[in-house]
Length: 79
Image (cartoon, rainbow, N blue to C red):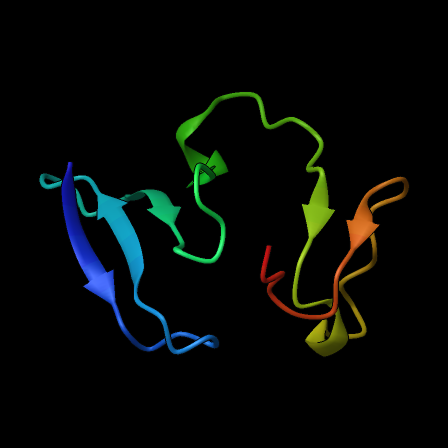
């Protein structure tokens, strides 16, 4: 995979984003705000499990409903 540092983030801290060097599909991202956590893009998998958290719920459009039993967070968690 190829990786770049995204500096246009809510926290102002760079986010490491990895993607396929052949097709450009997103693979994963890492944030310095959450050390040890790697966010793997679910589009990579045939079976998508239920998420543990929904983020940016404060700006969720009215047609996008909350997932029952999933933690709802208004913004990107800092830790």
